[in-house]
Image (cartoon, rainbow, N blue to C red; front, side, top):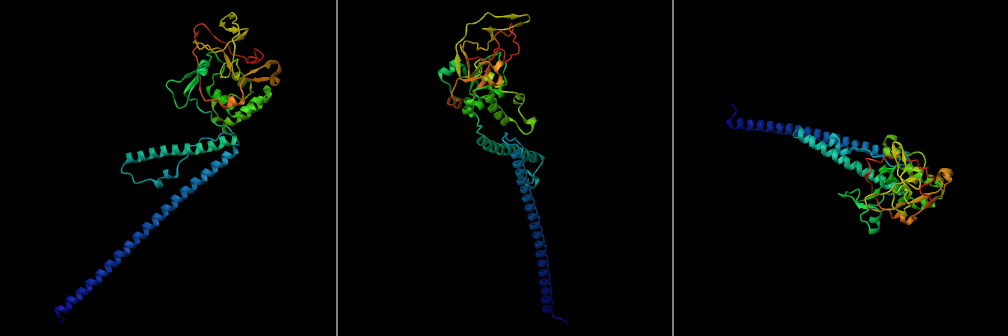
Amino acid sequence: MASWVSIVKSRNAITQENGTRAATTQAATTTQVSTRDQKYQKEIQEQQLEVFQVHKKYLEELEEEDKKMENRMPLYRYITRPDTHPLFAPIFKDLSEKCQWEQEQWRLNQEYSSMIHDQKVAVWEKKNNWFPVPLMTDVSEPQKKMGFIPVIPPSSLYKFGYLCPHNSEEKRHEYLQFLLRLLFNRSEQVCACKTVGEFEKVYLEAMNLTRYSDEEWTPTELKRERKTASNALWALSTKANLFPGKQLTHRDPAPEQNVPGVVYKFRNGQKCYEIYGGVGRRETGICGVKDARTLGNLAPIRWFISPAEMRNLKKFDFTFQADPHASSYLYDDFDWSDDGGFGGY
């Protein structure tokens, strides 16, 4: 019969052996779990890398599309950042936390899209010499007399406005800002134009910059302007009284001429576009065109300000006065060729 000591030793050996087996099994199980985790993490990293590669390829495709637009303004596109992909999402405690995360990603996507667009526009502006007009931040006493007034309350877009005739036939604000930008960026070319036809070439070239490859993205106010440069020259002329420049002396007022059903105000047989409210501004503009109706594109242009003065222009708001005679005055549509030119000279 085996002794008690030998039995205990035998049991201890068995226990030790079982413990070693259990430890080995647990270690093997832990190793398997660790291996699965590493494999899963590696798969996640590969998928995340693929998301970044897809995003990079998408940006390259956008670059190719922009090249096809030639010199036209780059389109704004909403671009989703790679970090917005569910693969990068944290574990949410509840639906509310998920919604907050999605809203924050949308905001970051907006900032990212604007940053990409601003970068493209900056390159485009430099390439085409088509920079935004600097904002007017102060006015001199002579400018105040010309009709510049502070915008109340001031905004980041405009600090000062320029009073314009209430009965003007050109009130498209975005179009007038386009003409201001044209003078600022094409001062030498504009002043070198001696005829309507020469100006039209410079005008249409600049107009093409404002158009997008997709017509539906073209600003509505600019989309209507596709004919000739006549509207632009009239708006810039002293006849229109829309742009600060040279002031002409007032001609002697002629009696008002009435047509049944419509009341017009004329000066020397021509329709007036003047400023009310005690400003006392004379007819002011950038140019004059002579015999436009009879000479057409051969009509001569006289520029009243120099290229240096055009480059010194600042961005302001075109502020149209309210009609002081709204109850008694009606105005017909203006025909730019009625007086054979835009103010003459």
